[in-house]
Amino acid sequence: MRILILNGPNLNMLGKRQPEIYGTRSFTDYYNELQEQFTGLDYFQSNHEGDLIDRLHAASNQYEGVVFNPGGFAHTSVALADAIRSIGVPVVEVHLTNIHARENYRQHSYTAAASRGVVSGFGLEGYRMAVRFLTENTIR
Image (cartoon, rainbow, N blue to C red; front, side, top):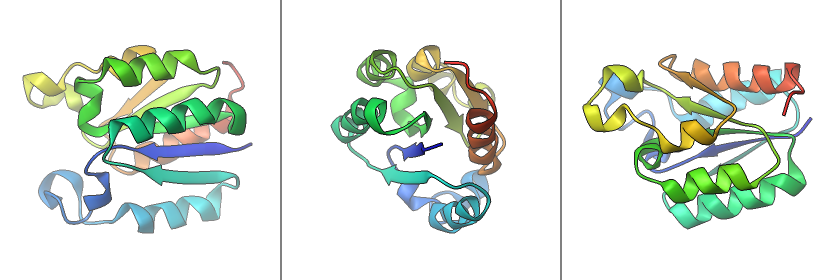
């Protein structure tokens, strides 16, 4: 099974950006650990909405699932939500923090409404949970 892990804006700064909120571990270090446990993973990160949309569109021909952390775009992007709806691949949205316990503007996610499920508030472990779900469930 091939799964794309897709990260949005500022997630390239994990380990450096607000470590009191997001932790001190880089995503690259965590991704290397995931690859030891799961085969067929690919990773892409961009701070640009259009690049994320393009990757979602391409996913329908390349992957059986997408784990997507849209970062701040979750709260603003109807375009990303539409892209998720346009592909025939299950998407599991991931947030490192519990977005429902944060600022009001972070409590709504346009992309979550288009996704198969959401993992929120478990830190980096949320990615493993999402990958596990996709590898163990074939429901689209």
